[in-house]
Image (tube, rainbow, N blue to C red; front, side, top):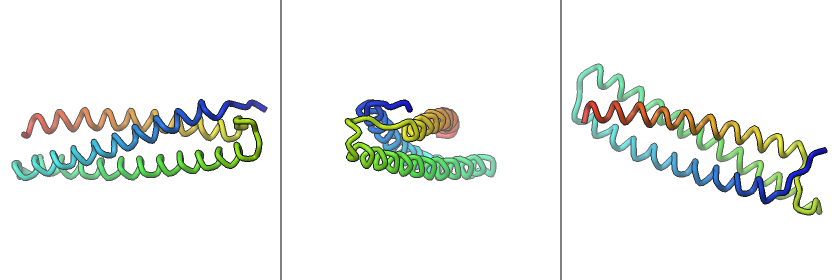
Length: 127
């Protein structure tokens, strides 16, 4: 069974959680800009796009919250295993969960970056 030192995964967890907090704050900033765009432009086409971005921001906030929760659950499971005298190492099952979380983090980051890019183009057009 493969074992990995807990410090490796701990550093990644910290990075992921800080990044998710940043993206969540960024979504709040973008929401404020979206409100400004909506106040200045009442055309039906613009309002449809505003609604689209409102929905996407809400979906991504929920995804961020769920992913952060799942990371915290993994952190807790790792802490319990380490307390069980595993000399600072975790087993393959927890490592697999960690790797899955890493994949989800990377996918969420890509989605967020794409959403932010599309929103910035939209906002630049209508500000």
